[in-house]
Amino acid sequence: MKKIGLIIILAIFILFLNPNTALTCDVCAENQPAGLENITHGEGPTAIWDYIISWGAVIIVGFTLVYSLKYLIKPKENSQSHIKNIVIDNL
Image (cartoon, rainbow, N blue to C red; front, side):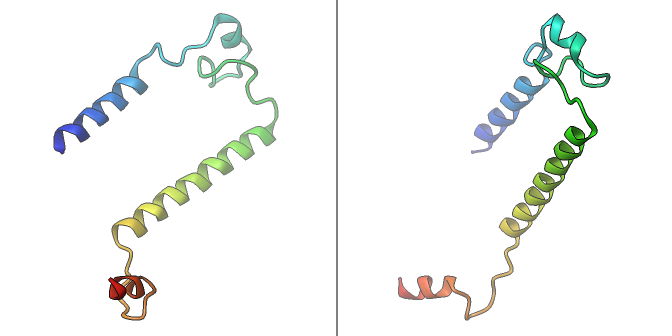
């Protein structure tokens, strides 16, 4: 099991750390705003609202990730009246 996890982590690092995976063409790189060159094809963010929406989404996804991991690792469902016990008791 440890080997599979190691292989998956290694594959992710190779995929995301390879400099050729996400390079843009020369025309797109010239049209991107400063700081975002060579990230994506097409037109980059054009107004401040594009950045606000993007960073708002990043913050929401970050909170969602943190809380989902928190409640998956330690759910704190110790009460005998919790709904999961209805299913467990019927088995």
